Length: 434
Image (cartoon, rainbow, N blue to C red; front, side):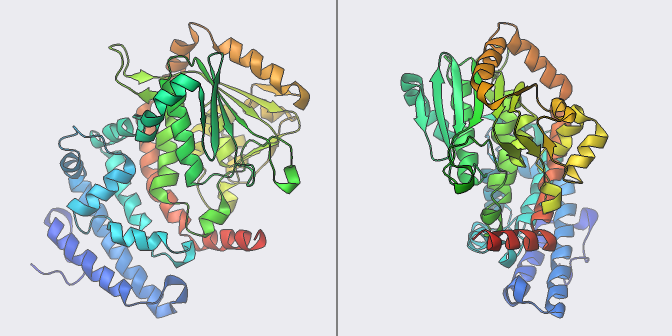
């Protein structure tokens, strides 16, 4: 059977061969067009119609076959593939379902405004997998397993108690894993390197049996405006987003399903009959500011301290994107009205105003932060803390609710990162800060 248009087949008649043929036709059409930013109105309309059609076919196909595809890729759920490995395996095993490795290599070489938006197709795929009742939980478990990099570094960390990476310094002192964000030139703005280093550090802190509590704090900056001051985190690196270096799979999805989720649940290490997860309590200490992803992080920590001259903000909506899983978690802390003010309206909350106590446990004079941190760490180093924080997290954030949120996030965030408003805003930011 031949397919002349993406609407020729639907529902039960849709099969993988038809999808592959239509994907090839759309790819040929796109290859004959100029770069997205150089297209005229008719060319943009033709590309949009073709992409809408093939994406509708992918949604329909995955609605019927997501579990089957996942079982094939993971050999009946006996292999644990991380999200990047999964989309790569799908590209090779099911042509037309997601972009090929070669297509994604071309995308990675382009600025955000020049890309075809193929990550949207990866978002369609991940949404379907995460929605699926068997595949979704299995993928969450795959993302909770320790990374190969962490396993390689674990013997060194256990022996020396120190691992220094580009974005994070990890040091064990008296049973505490001190994770210090140390991208001093960019105010700890998040990029691929920081996500990779943070997941490695979190894995190591959880896997080292000598660590009882984890602490995250920003280091001292060399940035001219904040030289010598500690800064927690400036959020996503907008320069990198504009240049096309903040990918959906390896950054936006990996960050949430990887190290942030591990802080909540623990690392899946298969060590014990009573729980395969190794989890520990965590403290965060905010100096100067926690913007965007920095503020998102605070929602998963067991105890948060903030210097009295610091502030918190989640400007993702004003930037045009979705602030990770903050939409899933923030209302639990602040209630719906304040959450909407922060996420939809871009409200900044200063540490010394009353609403800050909805998000932080202690507000401390800057000169008193070190002593307050020591007291907080001592309080969380108790025999009953671990079991109780595990039960609190289970009650407050059931895995099924998190999985459903992340399924929709995978697609909606992909769509947002290719929105004309986002591309325009981050392009202007990058040009202004160059």
